[in-house]
Image (tube, rainbow, N blue to C red):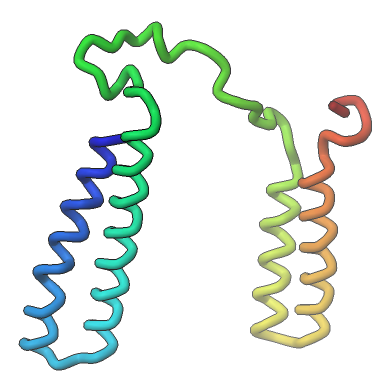
Amino acid sequence: MRIEGMIFVIVAIFFAVITPIYWFMSEDPTGTTALVLTFGLGGMIAFYFMLLSRRIEPRPEDRHDGEVEELAGEYGFFSPHSWWPLAGASAAAVVFLGLVFAWFIFIIGVALAAMAVVGWVFEYYRGEYAH
């Protein structure tokens, strides 16, 4: 995690240097605000990663003597055959079409999106693949 922390330290330092230069050259309050917020975000992530790197032991990819075999094992559960993302994307398309054309299409899209979310969340709680 130390390497990731250093990447975000570099990001925070870059935006800390660039922000006042941008402000003096453009006097644009919107862009300056965005750059300040980007600096803050990079600093927060860098702080968290550096704090985390002290709490956990080094991962194999962080050590010079780390081996590929040390990373073997289970990474988690990933759904191999879910159709619910397609239903969610279709519902999102109906929602955006409703925003463009008519409010009743938007309401239908929101209802479809709610059904897709419920189906996706509870996909493995019933039926053949219940856990």
